[in-house]
Image (tube, rainbow, N blue to C red; front, side):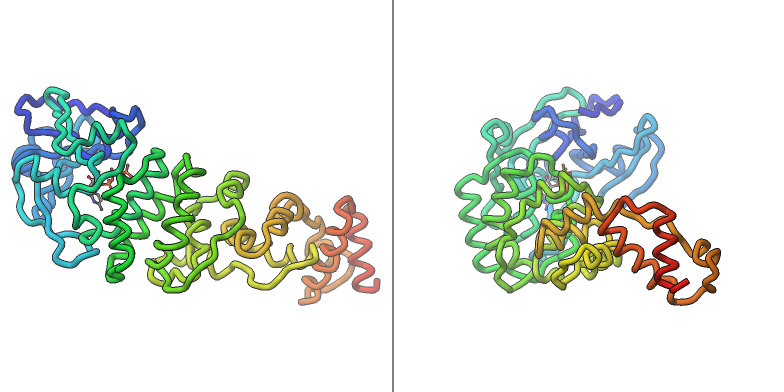
Length: 368
Ligand code: CTP
C-alpha cells in the first residue's frame, strides 16, 4: 500500500474504498483516498499545505510530504435524481454510515491510518477471499446504474463473480432500465472497464454474452445486436491502441448517448463501410485513419483485411515525391496525386520496386 506519512493518533482517519481492497489483494492502487470521521476540512488542514477546499462535499486536498492527498469527510448521500451524481446529505456522520453508502462490500473496507486496523462492517474481507461482488442494499442499482458496469469492471479485473442476490437485483433492474442517467459517468466506467483491464478473456466473454450483448447494449441503443465473432482481445493484443475501450464499445450500433470527444467521434466516423477488395482499395481506405478505426473495420467487416493492412500494406511506401516529378519536368498539378496513386498501385503489386523503377513508372504515367 502506498503509505502516506501522516502522524495521527486520533484514529479519525481511514484509508477507504479501492486502496484498502487493492492492499488486501496485494495489488497496486492508483488513488489514495482517506476519509476523516467528522469534518475533514477542519481536521486535515494541519497535515500540510492546503491546495483546495470543497465545502459542499466536505473535501480538502493537502500536500503531504510532497504528495497531493484527498481527504473526505465521512458523509451520507441521497439520490434525488436516480442515475445521476448523488447529493451530499449529511457531513460528519459515523464511519459506518459513510461505508454503507458505497457500491460493493469489497469497496466498503476501511483501514485506520493510526493503527492499520481493518474496519469491515459489511463482510468485505470474506467476499474478497471468495471472489464475490455483493451490493450493500437492494436499491443500489436503481440509485446508481453505473454500478452495473462497475461490477463488470471489477469482475474483469479480479476474476470475481456477482453473488446470486446481487445478480438477481441486477437482472430485475436491467429488465426495466431507467435510461435517464449520467452517460458521462457510464463512459468513465466503460473506459476503465475496457481500457486497462489486463485479465480480460474470461471477463470479456461474460461481458459480451451477458452484459453487453443482451443488456448493456440497451443502455446505449434500443437495437438488438449480434455479438462480433472476431476475437477483439487478440486483435488489441496484436495492435495496441490508445483508445482500446472504443474498439470494444465502438461495436455498439448507436453510441449517441455517450458523450464522445471530437477525436473519439472521428474514430467511429472513419470506419469504412464499403467492402474492400484490392490491396490498393484497402490501402487508400486505411492510410489516413486511426488504427482504432481499422480495428473496428476488422471486427465489424473483415478481420483478414484489417490485419493485411496493418501487417503488410501499411509498411509499403513509395519513395518518389513532388520534387522528383518536378525534376523529370512535370510542373505541379493535381495530376501529381494521380501519378503517386499509379505508382503506389504498382508498388503494392511488387514491393521490391526501386526508386529508379518508380521514376520510370512516373515517366510512363506522364508519357515522358
Ligand atoms: N463508489 C460507489 N459507487 C460508485 C462509485 C464509487 O459507491 N458509483 C465508492 C466505492 O466505495 C469506491 C469509492 O467510491 O471504492 C471510490 O470510487 P472510484 O475511485 O471510482 O473506485 P475505486 O474503487 O477506487 O476503483 P478503481 O480502482 O477503479 O479506481
